[in-house]
Image 1: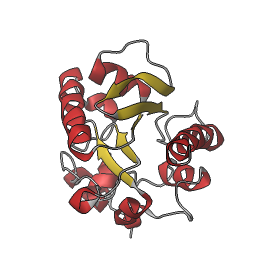
Image 2: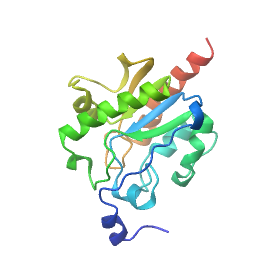
Image 3: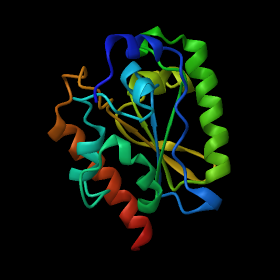
Length: 187
């Protein structure tokens, strides 16, 4: 059932728990969104708004063997995947976040990477990444820097509002990331 307008407004500033493997399981990629939207806050699921391209891109790129519904997010660790966000609180739009919230989220994300040791950290949202980590020239794709042992990949924001990145282009970038993670497993 879709959230009502009242449900969405009541979801403001909620926090959605991270999706991570329990007990130190293997983490190929830790995906980080910018922050959860109100729809995600109302449902409790990451990238839940209809029209968000995260789940279709994840499947079409070969990370999952079928299209997962956001309500199946807890299956991600079985694929060696996890989800978090730079900023934890839900907002209607990412531009409601302050630069300091993004920088604080960057520090939290670095600590999370240190603790869970993913092979790759994939941040979905180049502008938020630039702000969070003080890297104003960052482009989409693999980065030269690492966080601990994790390689860094910046993905396009999969929000349906990001019209300059249609699903096919987003999927192509997810595919490049998946191929890079496969190369780590199959030298």
